[in-house]
Image 1 (spheres, rainbow, N blue to C red):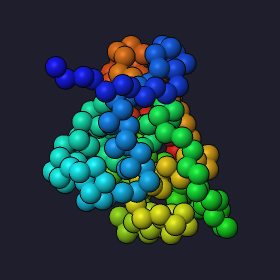
Image 2 (image 1 turned 45 degrees about the vertical axis):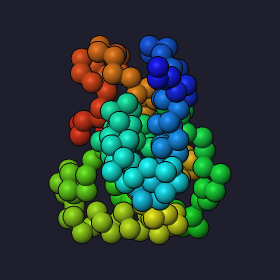
Image 3 (image 1 turned 135 degrees about the vertical axis):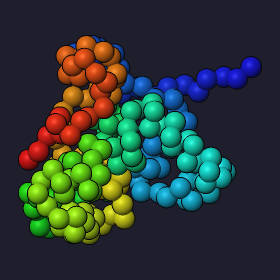
Length: 186
């Protein structure tokens, strides 16, 4: 008989009272993603193959829900499933408003192309802001950038519950996945 791993719980939802939770094994995967590990490094650290890590990550996306590593870290942090990053340091120069706009929209699950189209920017400009952000934070990827930005309290934290309760006051009639119209801008 298989045993179900214990769940890690986060903040209770202010509207429905249901605490966010995540299976323990998925929480370990999430913490590795948040610190910026690649699939290859996660596989090496866990004794899994890269293909298994990809399937494991897909399960994580379904549980949160999220459609990317970046959005998974955002949803999990807002739900209290990730602690503050111990090594998050405020950069010497502040973040440009457009850089934070791009970071916020990436955190909410938008692709670079969607951000460019939505904000009247070129794809090159969006990539430049993304690269600049990574350099300012000293990180190698978007998931780590979102984790550090949340730890610095630089990203907005709308509704913290990743629940999919139909009719939830903060979700309306559909699922909780952010839509382009629901993404906050700075």
